[in-house]
Image (cartoon, rainbow, N blue to C red; front, top):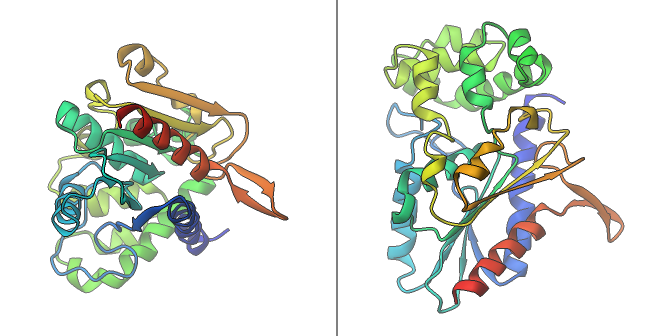
Length: 287
């Protein structure tokens, strides 16, 4: 697997979810982060991991574009149901799950989404990543394997490549291109771009669980115990005790955003079906 396959895998996840959502009567709109999905940067800015301003702008735009239509959304992708109920729910995959967690915690009772499903989220992965001294140290503390760390850094470099001219004077471009792990890439790009003093300070502000105790809508966390990217041994199971709105669901197998089963003669993920079933249940309770 190379860095291009890492990016392709996430695109395939979204295609499968959009197909399942539209087959269930939803209208799907994919939300890509700044500079992702072949979009061109018009300002020298990339979205910090925990920054929710772009997501809020997307929600506001969708509501103005489809007035009176309830938003049934995901952070990659958003989905819109043509029903009459004013219920809004959300789903996020991987980094999208981190963004959704940040939004739900930050907004609390003022959230414009009435429920959430987080597929393969990072839990305490990011804070451990921020305080590790090397990829091997990170792995020893329960983080992802150094090989995956390397591949994800290369994937981020691929995403950055089209924007070198726009960002060159705002980041440490040589260091970003030379990065062989996520920590080095984050220091060269996000820490510098958003004027943080250190990687630890950046991730303290961006940690998707920083406000998890403030989540005030039903939220399902779905993870596999064999996830090599966001290992479940870093899960703070105490979040369930601290917040009655949160449910944790673990499977023995499923890898990272996988959850494949053999169905109709091919392998396909059952995660979209599970997420939509959960959301349908929540909508049914609130109709």
